[in-house]
Image (cartoon, rainbow over all chains, first blue to last red):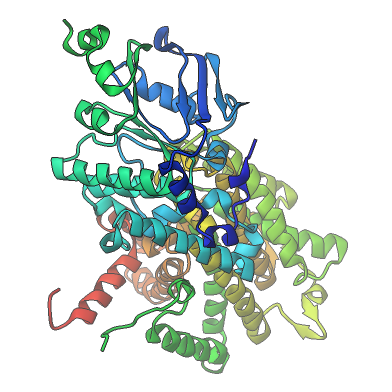
Length: 284
Length: 345
């Protein structure tokens, strides 16, 4: 179930294998593999079906957009995939393995990371600490070895710090490194949120309305960051988003949801002209 | 030429001692602590020992409350668990009281783990209420152990190699050694991944779960470690006291410890706790001993007996409202001011 990325050690990071993976994706010399698949997901809140019999798949190496009006069930679906909601019915598969009942913290170890609509960062910590917290699932050593600060713990902490700095470089967060996250503007917080997810060296990142509440400049910065990460590290992205302009610009494929159901799926140009999508968005 | 202090490795950036002032502080602190029995005698040496005992307990509570954000009103009861473990082992099984201190820590850690169980489902006020219930239950159990008397620890169990560790200089150095080890361990836990996980649970437990932190285990760990510290402090307290009685571990002591953490600096496990204990334990005890005769002389006996709690309550309220980061934040601001002086920024 774990795959190769669970052998997450300092040496493998040093050879920078993730960059090689990015090159591989750019050349398109790989076979598309389905990373995440949901089957007939049903989520109900007090009798209201937030997600109604939804089956989707996310292929490796794509940027998938999930769009839909408010209350369409996009975030609920994302919460099911990241393990925060347990579906009333249906299954979630990751690389063909059923993970429906797996707790969220273990899904992260498999390679599923996510960001939040309202940056759910640790507001009392600085940027570096926030990013390093994302690496906690891979920590080495028990409580006693942390209390004694053994050489193994020291080495791991240095590795985690190096990894955090690497992501800080990637997302251009240098100047905010020691800033308490709660004091940063929303655009930077979104980037820190993405940085925390990327530090986990995920195979797929689910981003919940990353553009919400951002200015045009902040949106451009974030889109640039996503594309750069996608191109250089070959990470699969799933954007749950309202901003149609952003989604149609950068996504390979779009899934449209309305009233908890998938109403359309396909290439951006196909989807935006789909009669059901037009109806859902314009109410016409 | 670069101006300022630059660190060239991550190891140097994460070290406890990062600036020249840290080394100077360590040197001065070590000399003062090691030579204290030369200039502190009798009552004042006892005050130093009590300071260290309460410092260990406050550090434990700072891990549970300050780092992990889990309110515990049963910390004194956990101290009691440690004290009773030492007392009963020494009295009933003849175990050396000094060697029983680690066992006291383990016993209280186990109890701390049990106290953590409500935190899996409860937060904030509800968790505080659950810990309050635990405090009362434990107080009741302690009162049953020795209903009308203190448990006296046999003198001979307080000796190792003919040295009596129940008072004075030997007890001071024993407490100092234990304090240094436990403070270092707490600082290590706070600066590492475990400390960050606890802070993450404190700041946003939903996000903590999503980024891959086992929230339940982290909460249990925070209570267990806090319990261990309280147990060791209680064990030392048993060694220091002539007898162990439940009156030493009441709710008021729990609130006092809570005040030490909140006023000193929640989340700043070593320096915050140290400031809190310095103000509320050492500072207050000395102020009380000089003020009380004066108040009693003026016929204000009632104020003399309750002044401590009036001041404690007021201070907690003032700090929660005006300076939630505690005295340590005030000191940090003064330090920044002095660093930048004569410029304002």
